[in-house]
Length: 93
View (cartoon, rainbow, N blue to C red):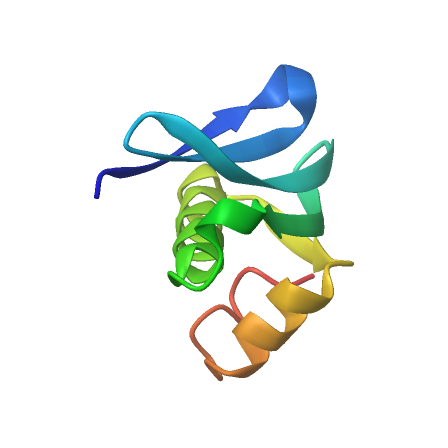
């Protein structure tokens, strides 16, 4: 299974593909050097494969690489980060 996460700025979201097919996305709001993650979605046919975690991990890695500050409105991302104490605290505003 080939998983790819790509930032699509014109749609204000990261898109998740599995074997070349769109499988989900992470919506965001970008203002200057601050990014707010607003909604995580994995399409029904791809649920139960751990893809939401793959998506969020890739997004957080990209945010770190880009030196952005993170705000969270998405409950999934909040829970994901809470389960990994200290791992992403450097990103949070």
